[in-house]
Amino acid sequence: MPGTRLFYNMAFVLLLLYTGLLLYWMFFGFGRTLQPGPPYSYNIVPFDTISQYLRAMQSSPFRVWGVNLLGNIGVFIPFGILLPIIWVSMRRVGRLLLVVVAALVILEVTQMLLGAGTMDVDDIILNVLGVLCGRVAYVFLRKKLRIES
Image 1 (cartoon, one colour):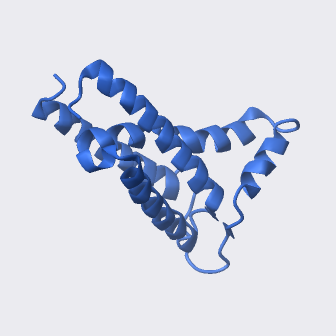
Image 2 (cartoon, rainbow, N blue to C red):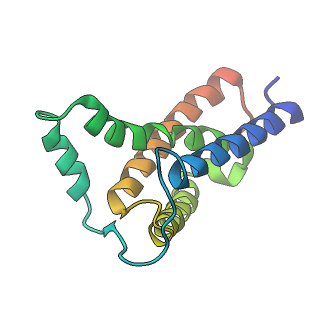
């Protein structure tokens, strides 16, 4: 099956569906409401939010720190797998990271401007880590499924 047009088409449809679900989560899910305009909520200090959640591990339940830290990594793993399957240019880590970081910055700023959440550089860091985890999984899948290089 890998190597056929059907395999790539299925990966593309899966990517579109998953992207739609993720956009819903980012802008409307978890009780979010759009409230455009100031005051804007943002964090541009790398590892500030991450360190707060790591410190909270001792005193807060998993659903507080785990969902934020592991959730921000986990939800982006599929992109590290699907993007290189669909687009050959995304098989190079540098190109994949360039596209992903640009998209994440746009999404985080849009989320802030629309009042759907906080623009947080740590979310970008965790999301990129998720994509890289997915990229590692892609390498293993490529060998197992014999996806063309």
